[in-house]
Image 1 (cartoon, one colour):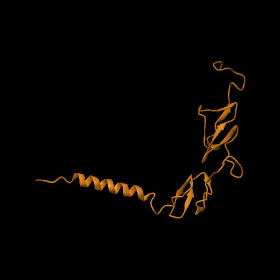
Image 2 (cartoon, helix red, strand yellow):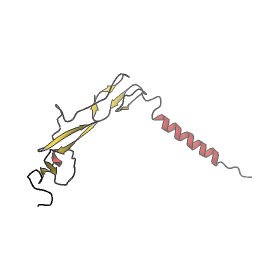
Image 3 (spheres, helix red, strand yellow):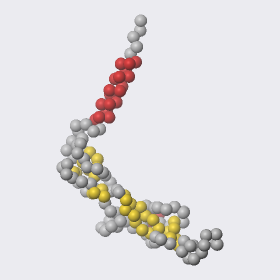
Image 4 (cartoon, helix red, strand yellow):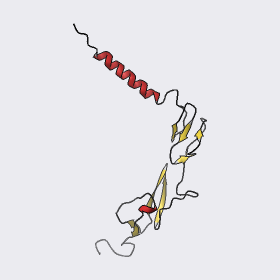
Amino acid sequence: MAVSRRPVALALCVFLSLCRAGAQHGPACAKWCPPNSVCVSGTACRCKLGFSPPDKLITSPTGTCDDINECAAPLKVSCGKFADCENTEGSYYCTCSPGYELESGGKNFSNESENTCRVTLQHLGFQKGQV
């Protein structure tokens, strides 16, 4: 009579999967890493891109990762003419200033090289469907 080894093999697979999943947050990773950071060791974390301090390791549970305002000095991202920078949590985007629109009809873009803001026909006094 043949004995089925499937239950044992299945249990072993589940056990190994759980062990691998736990290794990502196991003893080699600081459990106190602040929000918006990634663990780099059992005693250190690093802030994610868009948060400060970006290049320094955080080695204390009291450390924080604060949003970098890419739209303010000294970084001040350039969105180009007739455009405004909008800061978001961990990032930013550009929009055309009031009275202007992207040629593509889109709403947002990433930087000055993608800027195609042009004056809207409504801003010039035309009504939709007039032109």
